[in-house]
Length: 257
Image 1: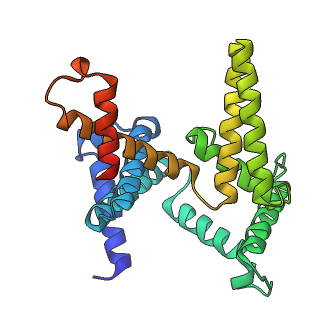
Image 2 (image 1 turned 30 degrees about the horizontal axis):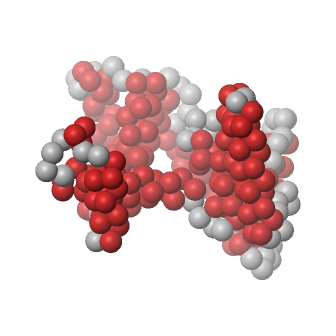
C-alpha cells in the first residue's frame, strides 16, 4: 500500500467514527474537549524521544497525527476549512520561506536562514494588514522557560542580542545580586520580580550556549527524582524518621554510584 493510500485510509476511519453510525464518544468531541488530550500526546512524544524509544515514538506520532486530522475534520464539518487547505497551507509556506532552496536566494549560514525566515514572516503579516512584531508567533500557553527562550530567539533574529557569552554570564550575575538585595530588603514583590529576571537571564544564557533551558531543567528534575528515590530505597526506616545527615549521606552515595 502506498503512503498516500495509508493516509487516506486513516482519514476515512476518522470520518466514519464521526459519522451517523460512528462512535458516540468521537461524535461528541469538540476542538476544546480534544485540546488537553492533544497536549498530552505531545508530552508523550517528548518522553519517547528522551527515552530513545522508537517503538513508543512511532505509536505516539500516530496518536498526534490522529488528533491533527480530527481537528481538521471538525473544521471541515463546520465549513471552516478542509484538510486540503491545511496541507496546501503548510506546503506553500515551506516553499515561500525557503527561497534558498526553492528560489535563487543565496545564504551562507543557518543564522542567515533564520533571519530570512523572520523577515519573510513579518512581510506576510504586513500584507495581511496585521500589526507586525518580530515576537509574533510564540504561543502564550507554552511552558514559561520554553516561551522565554522562543521570545529571545525571535529578538535575536532581528539583531537584538548579546555579542558574546561572557556578557550574558555577567547579566546572570547582575540579576542574582539584585535578587539578593530584594531578599535582604524583605520585599516579596521585588523578590518575585528579580527571581523572574534571573530565570529569564539564565534562559537567555542557555539559548546563547545552544542549550534548551526546558530540557536542561527537565534533566535536573529527573536526576533529583532518581537520587531521592535511591534514598527512599536504601533507608531501612520511613523518611520521616530519618535525619537530614542520614539522607545527605545516601544522596552523596547515589551521586558516586
